[in-house]
Length: 251
Image (tube, rainbow, N blue to C red; front, side, top):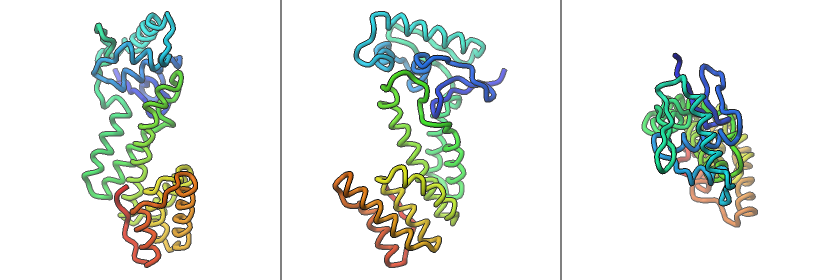
């Protein structure tokens, strides 16, 4: 029988051969997400209650959680390699982390840190392609997206910056610009993204555009945070002005 896949990087769910198996409600998705985030460890009943109802769970909340777990068990019943176990403290999902997109993403980005730029670009592209939309889509309430999802999104953005840096290092400048331009527009306070975009533009012969990126980024930093650009962005700016640009590093 084919192996199943668990997804957190987009719509939360269980998939097999590209077809979703469930869950079907936001509450069930929240319980599945909690179990996957604590994979092979116990997720306490209290954490599940908090994920679904915040600080004020309903009187029937514990029974509801038990019902959601039962429905998840039915979805997973055909797959003996996966199991949800019960303990006095809560529940635990036993499975292989390679079946979960989040853990595959982290493994690939980790390997990319210790390899040469050409291979790193391949690994990071593979990692980024695991994302099917905003993390934890479809869960109930805002606790999971606000407490956990924002950190997962930061991981994605950092991986995208690393991917662009690898592209620049191997001379794939146009591809780097294509990746970085929307990132700089959507996240105008990310100085690493701006610095990388300046490098890619300048090396592509677009020095004026690179300087525009600096001035736009500085404007946002001063207006929204009341701070001047940091050392990485300032160094890139000076290198563009001196026309001796090297690929920026650091964050």
